[in-house]
Length: 247
Image 1 (tube, one colour):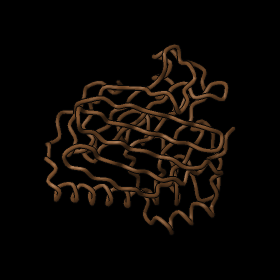
Image 2 (cartoon, helix red, strand yellow):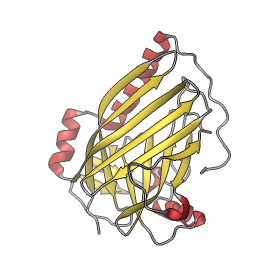
Image 3 (cartoon, rainbow, N blue to C red):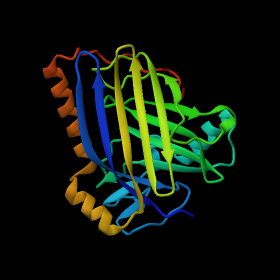
C-alpha cells in the first residue's frame, strides 16, 4: 500500500513558430494508488473534502469515469496485465476540479512500463494516449514515445502533427515532457517536482500559496488564451472529437 504523495511542482509551456509564447506556473498534484484508501484528514477518495480524487473524474467519459478499473482494462487490452497502477492528477478543491492532463502509470518491478495520458480540454471533451515501448520494456527519461495528435486541446493549436512524450519517474521525483511537433510550429510542455508524502500541512499551504486550485487552472488557461489572441495567434474552432476513447 502506497500512501498518497504530493508533487509540488512546476509546469512550463513554450510555443514555437510564428507566434511565440511561454509561461511557467507552480502546480500541485497528487500521486495515488487508486485501489487503496487512507491519507491525511484533509484528503479523501470518492467523497467531499478540502482535497479529493473521485473515480468519476478519471478513466472513461468525463463525469462518468470508472477509475482504475478502466485503466487496467486499457493496459490489459494492449497486453500488459498485473502491473501496479498509480494515478498522477490534480485533486479537486472543495469539489471543483479541472485537469488539463492526468497520467495513469503502470509500474512493474519498480520500473515504469506504460502510461495513459488522459487529456481534457475546456470544451468538455477527453481523449487518452497510451504510451509504451515494444514488449512493455522499462521506460526512463531518455526514452521518447510518440503518438499522432488527434484531439483538440487549444483553439490556438492545430489538430495535426505528433506528440513526443518523455517520462522520468524516480523514487524521489517525477519529470514529464511533452512536445507537440507540427512542422515549424509546436508546443513544449513540462511538469516536474519532488515526490513527498501528502500531509494536511502540505494541503493547507498549497491552498494558501495557490488558492482555489482547479478554478485557478481555468483562470490561467483563459488568461493565456487572451494573451495569444492579442499576439495574433489564429483561432481555430473546435472540431468533432475523435470517436475512439484511446489512441
